[in-house]
Amino acid sequence: MTVSVDIQKLRTQTFGGGGGGAFLQTGIRTLALRHGSLVDAIIINDTRYGGSGGAQTSTITLAADEYITRVEIRHGSLVDRLKITTNKGQSIEGGGGGGTASTVTGTIVSLGGRSGSLLDRIDIEGVFS
Picture 1 (cartoon, rainbow, N blue to C red):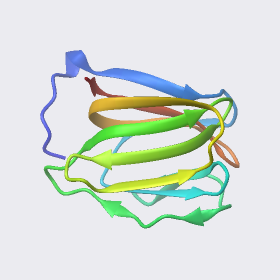
Picture 2 (picture 1 turned 120 degrees about the vertical axis):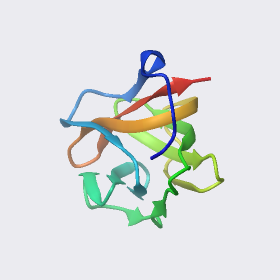
Picture 3 (picture 1 turned 90 degrees about the vertical axis):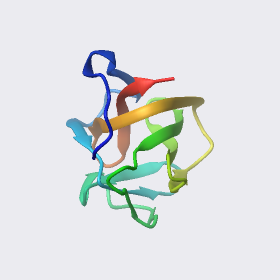
C-alpha cells in the first residue's frame, strides 16, 4: 500500500469481546467475509480468521493507492456485522442486526482482532477522522 500516514497519529479502536485467540494487525491487500447472522470470519490476504460457517462474500482487492476509509460495526461479545468501504468505493458487508452500532472513519491501515469459530473482536488501526 502506498498510502502515507503519520505513524505517530496511528491509533487502534477495538470492537467485540475477548473470546478466541488473538491475530495480529495486518496490512490489507485483499479482504472478504464469511457471515450468516454473525460474522463467522474475516479473510485478510487469503488468511481466514474465524470459522468456516456462513456464506462468503466476494473478495475485494485493493489497488496500490486504495485503502479502507470506513468500517461500520455491530458488536457485543462478538462481531455481529461488518461493512467495510474503501476510498475507491469498493465495499463488502455481512452479518446480522444484533449488538451495538459503531462507525470508524479515516485512513485505516490494518486490521487485527480475536477469533475462534467466529470473529470475536475486530481491532482497527489507522488515523481516524
